Length: 218
Length: 230
Image (cartoon, rainbow over all chains, first blue to last red; front, side):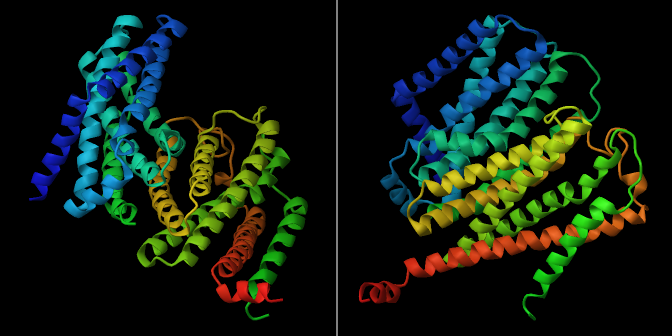
């Protein structure tokens, strides 16, 4: 039953995304414009800078695309959902939706990066996996924060203020992990770092599921 | 007197820390030299900050469980005091680093971790400032406080493993660890920790009392009535 709810909520969000094409293409254009600005500023940088710029772009894309998950809904509609589904189901649905969106956006930005800023990658497959893990981490954290911002009736600026310090270490871990795909250097403790990142994602999801019901009720 | 014994203890400990910390002998170490005395002031400030943030975290959980607005006042004032101590710790650390490391800011993981937790709690204040309704402010800020604290602790633990630390005792720098048996330093350090803990709690209790008074005043119609009929 709950699974049916979850699936139909995710389907609803994706359908809205597909039907209101202007928002989807808006985000795509945002990604494109951001990468283009980065390219104009930096040209084709060396591998380390490339990595840093890539993750910075991911951060800004995450803020802009994930912000929609909660902030696009009218506050009154939350009351309607409240009567229909459990809060945890609702949060999970939003998380799945924003992870899907973010995965797509990170692939697009990776493609644009490789076209415009050059391709310093040694292990492309590994980098794609890491950027997928990165999109999951970023979108999960920002989904919860956009729920907070939506409840506070604020815009995505508040989400950025709340989120940037929280995701800075996550970004650092991600860029350290990604260095393995960029330069073939021996990195001790790579698996530990990857494991810590996954544990952190799990922690965020669990915390979100515990805390969201409190946020939800008025 | 029976209830304020800890305030007396606090004054004694801190008085002893100031006098003993400057006058008692310390081991002579390269680079650090006499600045090792900063251990008595700078390090306990961090401990106090963590203590206060932990207190705030506990009161946020209490608020979500019980819904008593007094718990929210406790949480917010503990956070404010914690931020005050983080600023003190940052300034004392930067002043010390200026002489020991040659620059006030040198990409040290502990510095970065503190800067990050300061940003997190500044955001907490911004979040609170944007909300006018008491109940809503209490609820949303409690949720953010718990979320941020629970994420901050593992991150503060992970971060030092990714950037090399310049702190004494890390990465081959001369430190206190090999002098752990130096009883002179212990004799000042432990009372210093207790003293700073207590003064942190003292400041927090004063702010909490002020917050509670304001809360009573705003939510007590009797008070309004008396004021108007004077």
